[in-house]
Amino acid sequence: MAAAGTPIVEARELHVHYVQSHVLHGVSMAVHAGEAVGLLGRNGMGKTTLIRSLLGLVPASRGRVYVRGVDVTQQPTERIVQQGIGYVPEGRGIFPNLSVRENLVMAARDGRDGRRDWTLERVLDTFPRLAERIDHGGNQLSGGEQQMLAIGRALMTNPQLMILDEATEGLAPLVVAEIWRIIALIRESHIASLIVDRNYRAVLSHSDRGIVLEKGQVALEGSARELLTDEQRLQRHLSV
Image 1 (tube, rainbow, N blue to C red):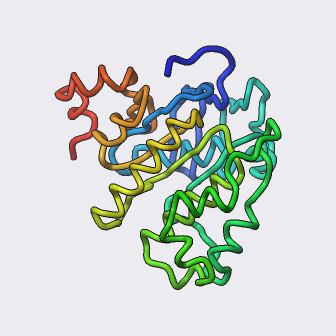
Image 2 (image 1 turned 90 degrees about the vertical axis):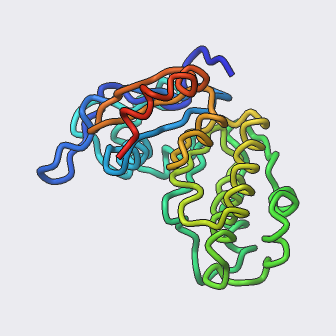
């Protein structure tokens, strides 16, 4: 989807340090309403750090983060995500001692615009396996089921932007196909998304634009179609 107007989330000249390590070097990027953006790069290039800094989980050394044009650089994470951002972290982050139902219900809230398109019933319809496991604890689920739960939990916040970090990592092929089906459904429902995954072809096939990070800088950016048709150039930045 072509994007215009004020972005949902934007980084401007963002620098991030971990102790003595300079991880992000002046990264600027944005995700607009209804837009799907793929964030690509080899391991250690700064993708997760960028996501965590957008959410206030990692402090910026320099530069600013904006949500709908408002500077949120110094705001706590809970204030940032309450502006309509759903987050599916690498590692899933579900509560192992809570049931599937409890993991979902505790996240439920109206969207920033007051809408509640994603209810418990809709999430369970979307993820039939979760419906079957509704009273099981998070620690009783398979890795694929945990990932479905993490995505379902984020959808229960009725977000306007979904951030998915390594959504298919370590999952069996059939589960991977199911996760991409859900990501396509999210896109079709006009929820914006920022997607990180090692399968760059799958990412770009579910995105409007792609951004490639290399050594903490934006090395390449363009429409998903352009990047896929210039695969040789893309491979120079992604190959090990």
